[in-house]
Length: 188
Image 1 (cartoon, rainbow, N blue to C red):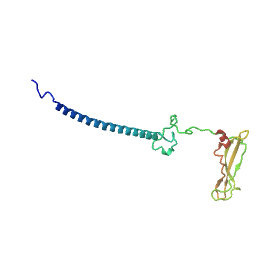
Image 2 (tube, rainbow, N blue to C red):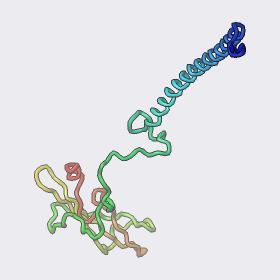
Image 3 (cartoon, helix red, strand yellow):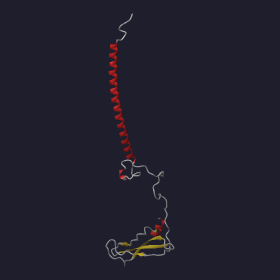
Image 4 (cartoon, rainbow, N blue to C red):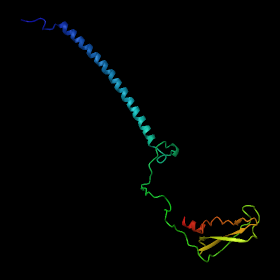
């Protein structure tokens, strides 16, 4: 009742063992190749991570948080530092607001008269021509002890050619009434 095909022989067992050893050797070789590939990939990933970190650091730098000039800020504008919300109004005096300026005084301290010397059109001397008008501008300024008001008067004279010639006001007289350079300096 014993079946000779069911019982393996020593030769068949040795052949199977050699086949298994060959398969195991092939698997070990592939495993070593895989380990070498994994090691190479890990090295590559580490190198790429350091490159990404360097580039990310460069992207985060702009003219506000580094010594880079504003011209290198590329296409992205850094967010404003101010936390104020826009009010919707334009800066400066609002339309309809009367504004604020000093009122002219009746008795200024000094009243220099500014005369035109030459005609602005033909260049003739107008110092002896008739006075046809006068405008004024008062400059409010601080003297050493009390407020010193100078009223500049620019006369207009008529030239013999018929042209009206007006003397220019000095640089500090920018309006009918305005503050002088010392008051402006005090305010600053």
